[in-house]
Image (tube, rainbow, N blue to C red):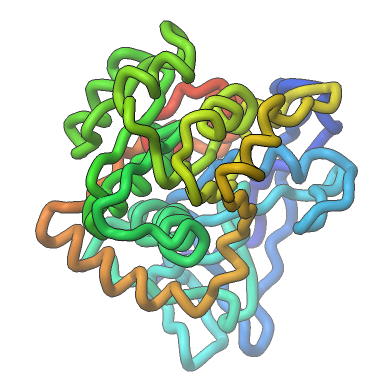
Amino acid sequence: MTTIPTATRQIVLASRPHGAPTAENFRIETVELPAPAAGQVLVRNTVMSVDPYMRGRMNDTKSYVAPFQIDAPLDGGAVGAVVASRSDAVPVGAHVLHGLGWREHAVLPAENVTVIDTDAAPASAYLGVLGMTGLTAYVGLTAVAELRAGETVFVSGAAGAVGQVVGQVAKALGAGRVVGSAGSAAKVERLRELGYDGAFNYRETSVRKGLSELVPDGIDVYFDNVGGDHLEAAIGHLNRFGRVAMCGAVSQYNKTEPTPGPRNLALAIGKGLTLRGFLVGHFPDLAEEYRTRATAWLADGRLQGDETFREGLDGAPQAFIDLLEGANTGKMLVRL
């Protein structure tokens, strides 16, 4: 018989970072865990995700999602097992995906969890290639950049969780050539193993030079995870009527002063470029379509995703700090 816990540990935002986050910005607390009410479930989290977008939520600024609050628990994607349930729809023992990470247990409405099949794929995959990470890549390539067969694609931050999937999905969708940037020689080599046609280490060569060498005839689609010098170089290298899917700007997240925009933005006029920002949450209608296609791509080997793990709730803050410094290959996850 499973013992139902009455207390749990969680991580709260102790203070707002100025620049790069530090361990002092987080605090671990032990709190009372209420029994689930009617229609609720109690989940023991087993894996949680840390993601770059969480850095923006640590600032007290208006954005597309509410900021984290001081002395309140952080949240984010997590998977776990239901240990108590007062819902007929989600039984005890079910494995579920939900949004209350950064804690060892979560009580939440059954309607706010998604039952997952851990026989079909590991639980962690539902936070990565089969989850928001993979869907972000798919949405950016299809709905935003409107990738067409035969086109050339450039992906920045290509060894990260989203970037790895972008390259593989682009190839599965018929892209003619896919190249990427990454922050180490090992990551560059890994991208080639994953099917990228070429990659360069942006710490050793400029983005402009890397693109000139790998795709001298230009690019048609740029999937932007980095911003800054990558976006500027991509604008210069985009072909006429090229498209930019603006997913993230990780190079700017820890900046303490406003970052100037690309100096060559006027090129977008003559080239007829489209630069479009997007949030994966704006495209819920594509989730089932992606899940179906991704499951098939996983089965036939055309899609895979690396995972970088840290252990225990105590390790979550450092995992997040490491993520922003590029210490991960693929998805950064914390086992609980």
